[in-house]
Image (cartoon, rainbow, N blue to C red):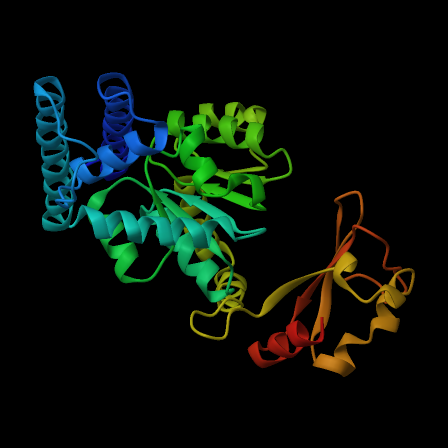
Length: 332
């Protein structure tokens, strides 16, 4: 990969060095003032052909030849570097990366997804349905080409490093999902992310049960074992098939997001704080029903009473048809 920025800075450094050498040389050899020395240096390295300030002696001529040859070499280096970058496409790639990075830097409370494997792909599909802003961290070139074609924001690199997570906006992220194939890599991501943003909620994938406690200890809010969940789900389809089928259908794939929605009491208009679920009257306003309540302590109440008060840091779990969920989101 061509480091355009490094070559550009190197060319600028060479140019400044030549200017400095030319100015000092003319001030010493010709006893010019600073302005006259700058003038002679500029007209020499630019080869514009303006008249020198006085007839030159042999030493001044040799010095002038040195400046001309050096400046021509520098110009050739700069042109070849730029041409090489254009021919390889790296110039436009870096411009595109910079544009993507600027978009990522503007994100607030977004989600970072580390790894675009089977689990990462499913997570992204779900986030898209919920119209959530997210950034993918991936290092596979083929996957990156696919993400770019899909218009998905991404960062190329190793998610276990501080620099890559910082580029992905970890300091402003609300959630991070790490779905890397290696439990050790997921552990590194969890450790790094929890240090860079202590308020970020981290969900990690795990392959082995032995990794579960380590990931939790490292700072993961939730640890998911896909194989274990898959087996339990298949067994549930045998034991309670109708219940599982119904629950599966609560989430629909497409433009209409989902049938279940969370409503944080902190996001409601302030006049509802201290009121009851009955006072909220969601059924009449949106057609949705409150099927769960999360207390400020983190406990869950299934099918809560309408007399339960809405307090700070609590939340509601609401069930409704897709169009009712849309109405709910517009209302709150």
